[in-house]
Image 1 (spheres, rainbow, N blue to C red):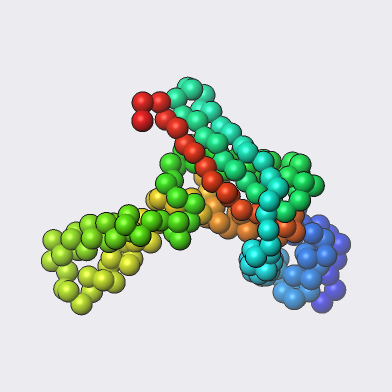
Image 2 (cartoon, rainbow, N blue to C red):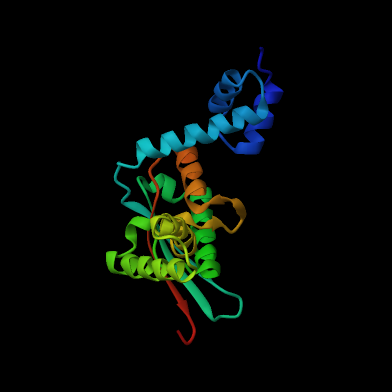
Length: 197
């Protein structure tokens, strides 16, 4: 099937992916726009994984103060080069992440960052809940693992649904940005302050 310029343009507008990537995805999907979009998302994840080992020592510190002045966030966003650090989309992502943190109040960046002691405490609470509900001992651990995933989506930034598109996680949006700018990007650290806390 011949891929028209109009099809490439439509996919590019929808995904913001580079023209070459859009053309490749459309060819692979034989002109099917939805399939091409899935291919681009998969390729974005692959690109992000390849770049994840590279050093990210440039970046910005973004901030957000809620309109009532009672909640504030500082977040460090790292990238590989000063060029990307000055990129408008990169800076906008930093501001959006600061806003997301203000709204969703995560405690850690990723599930790997949860301290072992906090994880064991949470598992003990979940285990006790499952036992009180009268669940059989052989499925209690499965229930604990399932509920632990919910704990991560509540407490870990990268696992949370992204506030601007609840169909995606923060990690999905981060990986999309990595594939767009072509550099490793990391959320270094954040601090959320709420008046009186």
